[in-house]
Amino acid sequence: MHLGRRIAAWTESPSLLALLVAGTPTFFVPLDDWLGLPLVRPPRVLFAVLALLFAARALFAADTLKKPGSVEKAMASYFAIVIVSWLTTLDLKSAALIKREGAMLLDHVLVPFCVYFFARQVRWTSLRIVTVVFLLVFVVGLYLGLTAILQELFGWSFAPQRVVVTHTARATGTFSNSIEFGVVLTIVVLLTLFAALRSSAAATRAALLATAAVILVGVIFCKARALWLTTPLALFIVCRPRPALVRFVGAALFLAAAIAVPLNRVAVPRFSPFEDASFSARATDLPSLRARLAANLVAIDMAVHKPLLGFGFGIETFAQNKAAYHPEWLIPRPWAAFPTVPHNTYLHVLLMTGLIGLAAYVWLGYGLWARIESSLEQRALADTAELAPFVRAAFVLVLLNALAVDLIFFSYVVLLLLFLIGMLEPQATEINAHDSSTHDS
Image 1: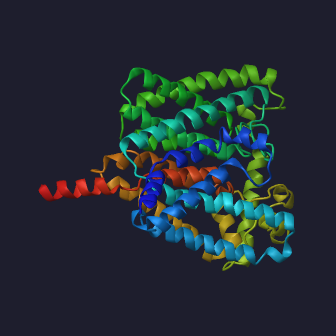
Image 2: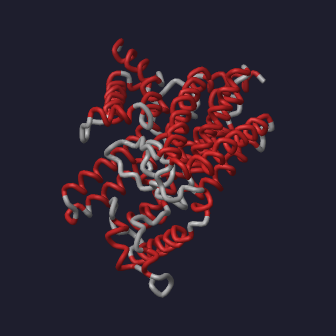
Image 3: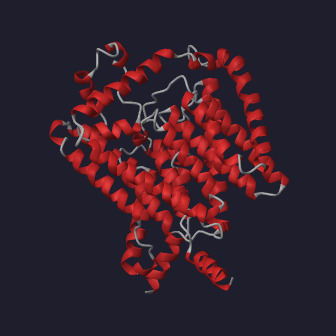
């Protein structure tokens, strides 16, 4: 019993979980390169430690665990469908591809889903919430923002050596894809606004303002057109009912533009190794828009031919099958020659797992949205209700960008978002206090 309570105390603290979330895109990256091990990576090791601790807690102190809710049930359903769909394709795949996809299922599905469950089990307090948010802002946000500036100037790569960077003329930080990088940065900007709202000290607010500006420079330098539209929308969502944030956001955007525009116009042509890294070149890049449109139409045609179960879950499912389902009467074949993914998360899930898999995916999204809305309605539970609007804006940001990217391959976006939603779990002490005050009144 004593051991069980001690394990429960360890896992009710957010320390190890926050270390996993903050360290995955930052200091774990050079450590991963230094170790050079093919499967044993720092985030996986830390996740294994957390999993063992929670398994021990379930064994020795099961009464301290919150029971799985509707979100976990939706996660289990979606994961089961994905596994079955994947298993049906194994006889056609090489051992190397099966290994890659197994690692993808671990990093992109299982780990984020478990992180949500782990976050729900933490005993969150105001101090812990604010501490974790500040950790994400000043470690993840500031580090990634600075990598974007250095990458834009000199073309330095900060991604792990094992990662193939797909967007070489845009800032990607420690990621392979500039859109995943930009979405992560925008989520951290939203957390910076939450921290600014909770801070009264002038020095702290000044540090947060400078950090927000650096992070926004990273968003600009990722040159993702979808984010140039969705980031302002996410900022508007949180600022509209909070006038106190408008001046802060305005100042951060002004500083970001003052840094980004001169660097792009003056320094980049002189120092950047890329042929054309200007904003105008990205904004007028019509061939990439045609390729995305073609990929979407091919994915729709594929889904129409196998609507119920899809073609099977896999990294190369779209790329291997797209040639036979090209609607040549609608779009020229060269337009779809390059894309290896549909560039739409919902279409990608549909063509791989069919309507059954898409239904489970939508059920999961609805459950997460309901969890956020529930936190917004619990106004008396101040520890989580104040964070909830910023998490809701992050959720809207991810949903919209999923229309233009393949979110299922962006493991850290999913990990970070599910961690933040898990933080919104109301605590027993708060619920009791709320119930008591309601009864007394």
